[in-house]
Structures are given as structure tokens and as C-alpha cells.
Image (tube, rainbow, N blue to C red; front, side, top):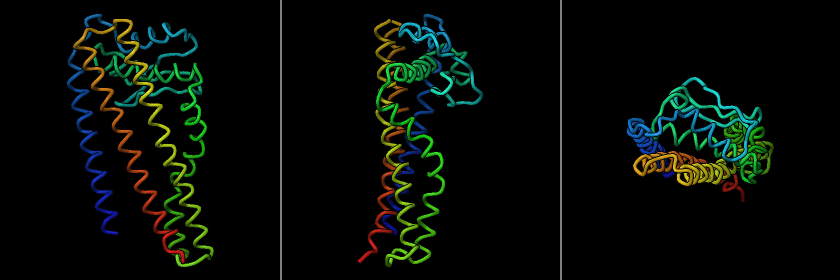
Length: 231
């Protein structure tokens, strides 16, 4: 148990460090104004057009770091600062979210797998740990009683969330690669602006990597608690 808390604490610390660094990077590159004067909205619309995508709308969404692509209604949702600003950070985010739209248009297999898991994970992620704890309380880990089956079901549901976290990795990295390739090939940014956008997306991707590692560590711990107690 102590080892588990140490591991989770270490992952939480790394997650905090990565998140803090990401915020600092975006603050830094938000001060690097684009020489072409294009806003995040304009960057997004041009990337979509250059990729032959005309059925996706670019819209503004409230909040910070709320940027996302919605495949259901085909919208690139940019936070207010990204939507209106004209800097290296907003260009990176806008192009990254359009990278997801390009994935959708090209039926990128990892995105399709991730989308298929969304309904399952949205239902199971909140209840998995409660099932495990409930099953262990019933004494299921000591034998093959009802409690053990409840706990095992919880581990299975937690496994879906963990798989989802790892499937998210290639989706996010690929979206960033598509964004950076387009920004570079179309000469949308000057060399120093491009370096800033590349660095910002690199740190954004690392947040997903840390989250996936944390999800795996949590799954392994609870799996050992449930299955390790069997004779």
C-alpha cells in the first residue's frame, strides 16, 4: 500500500510539473505575435481549406484550454483566447485541433477506435473504482464469492479507461504532427514562431503521456489487490 501511494504521489508530482511547464510555455509563446497577422480562427479555416475540408465549422467556446474537435457536429471549438489571438501559441492550438478534423476526414483508425470507446468510458470510468472497493469490502478478494466478481468487473471497466488513455496518445501526437507539417510546408510561420508552436505542442502531448502512465499504474495496483488475493 505504501509503495502504491509513493508511485501515485510521484506521478501526481510529474503531472503537476508538466502541467505547470505547459502553462508557462503557452504564456511565453502567447507573446510571440505572428508576422502574418492571422488569428487562430483564420489559421484553422485555412488549414481546413488546404486539406479540402469544407463541412467543418470553426467556432469560439468559453474558457481556457477548452479547445477541442467535435466529430459529432463537425466543429473545431477554439477557446476565446485562441480564437481571437494572433500568436504562436494560438496558431499551434488551432492547427492541432484541425489536425483532428483531418484525421476524421481521412478515417484515421486510432481516432475511430477512440471515438468508439467514448460512450463506454463515459459510463464506466466513474463507477469502476467504486465497484472494486465495494467488492473488496465484501471480502471478494479472498475467494470466489460475489464480492470478487464485483471487484473483477470493476477492474475490467477500469481497463477500458486505461486502454482509452493509451489510444489517445497516437491520436494526439498524430494531430500535432499534422499541424506542424502543415504550418511548415505552407510557410505559415517564421522560423522562431514555428519553434514556439512546436515546443508548445510537445508539452501539451506530454500531459496525455503522464495521464496514460497514471491510469496504467492505478489499474495494475487494483488488479493486484483483486487477483493477487486468489489462491
